[in-house]
Image 1 (cartoon, rainbow, N blue to C red):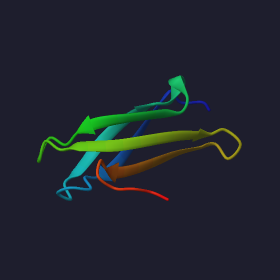
Image 2 (spheres, one colour):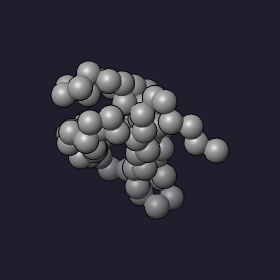
Image 3 (cartoon, one colour):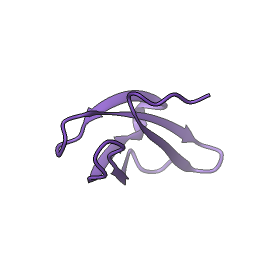
Length: 68
């Protein structure tokens, strides 16, 4: 991928506040948490780099959600 940093606008799963996040895609796939500046709750972020389709996939959820 040509860019090392990708910008995304996400919505906090707790309060709905819109956030601008910078994703460092040079480190590959990542699973991490960021705090919402509005409600201070943790936002779970799971980033996947799809090199074949040249896309950055970002899955955002609340810490209390379960995916099956």
